[in-house]
Image (cartoon, rainbow, N blue to C red; front, top):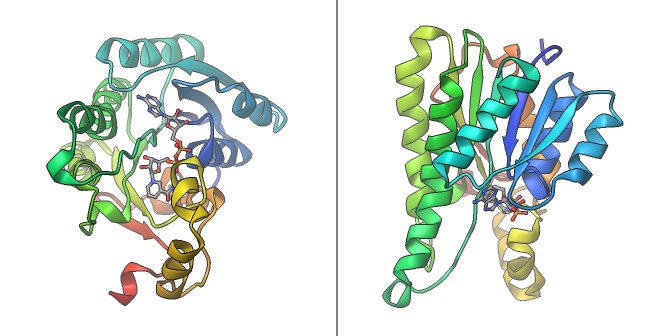
Length: 247
Ligand SMILES: NC(=O)c1ccc[n+]([C@@H]2O[C@H](COP(=O)([O-])OP(=O)(O)OC[C@H]3O[C@@H](n4cnc5c(N)ncnc54)[C@H](O)[C@@H]3O)[C@@H](O)[C@H]2O)c1
């Protein structure tokens, strides 16, 4: 039921962090994986090959339509099909709204929201019945946070992009869901979690009393990629150690 044998997956932002963990766990469950990122993805590719699955790295800036089209074309050339797309790549530029630079707003929306759209649009042209798109949003796509207007707007946009695509492509048997991680230990949160007081404040709000690891998001991604979730589409899966449940 959870098997991804003979499936082909693309994971964006898969060179490190949550994307790397998702790529590896998709492979562990039988998928061949296209590792896509703007930084080198060789480490992820090597780890997947050790699991006896095929993996290739395709350098892609997901905010560029041209590069996204190349990603999809190269994937089809190499693997002939796309069963799973995990839109994971993202950035977080915190800052007070009054002084937020227009270029930082644009960069955030272009990568976090337009990038997910461009990858979905290009991949959908090759997806068939049974395919699954998984968009990595955030709890910041459900609730607002101070000093994170662009990030929250982009992640909230992903939530409804997901539901719209689910409505549009459900009749073709293509499922689209979003995952909303809470606080996960990666490069993105390194700075925030390095502050002991901030981390302690977060832990008091977390029912599970720990911050998440990338693997905590990979399991839910495998579930949403597999037939185990074949009647789930347009869903927002919150994976946050119980944080939002207590609000
Ligand atoms: N870490 C958390 O607590 C957390 C919480 C909620 C949501 N998320 C989301 O999870 C996703 C992964 O984040 P992470 O924590 O692993 O962070 P990360 O910074 O470790 O990984 C992000 C990856 O995306 C890549 N990337 C950045 N811009 C790109 C672009 N234009 N094109 C292609 N790749 C690009 C980076 O090179 C990096 O490998 C992001 O969408 C993030 O918003 C993270």
